[in-house]
Length: 119
Length: 119
Image (cartoon, rainbow over all chains, first blue to last red; front, side):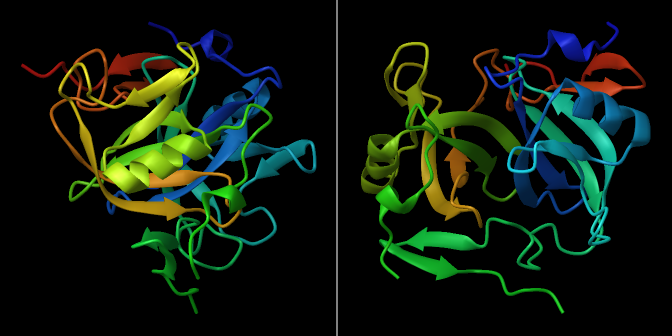
């Protein structure tokens, strides 16, 4: 069946969450949002392109930092309201320079940092 | 630092997205929503407990199906507006009986099913 981004389920802002996962390691790197145009751009360019809610603009991941995400595979969930992008991540995915944004673990009621910033 | 679920960033509905990832394989199983009480319940019971937007009720994953998610680790992202639950998944995570909800790949403009339902 041919894929039509219009068949995805967007929220009232016209956005759908997209989880980025590293190819190979399977590490969950980050979650950000896409609108229909960023889904199209991501598929066309193979550069993962989110929609920045704060800037209200396209966010070509790594465009300024160089920490790009090359799309390996885009997956749709059963409810069509969430995307999973398997990516080739260049350097850190997080703006804190950590590989993943999920570097804080809740362990026995305490927040523990489980990942250091990359060099 | 002690973890306080009230310091997480919830949307206008009082919800935060939570990604479930399988321990070991790293497979991304599903994404669903939590409110502050379901975050508390998940940490207290170690049974992943979402908030069902359609039913407007707690959704103890696997309560009826037996396909439970035992919490291994709960992680918070850098913006504190997304959670990652590393889980021990019993059987399929998806209501279609597939291991993961992300069983559809967009490949060369076509939707391809990459995962069969479990026995």
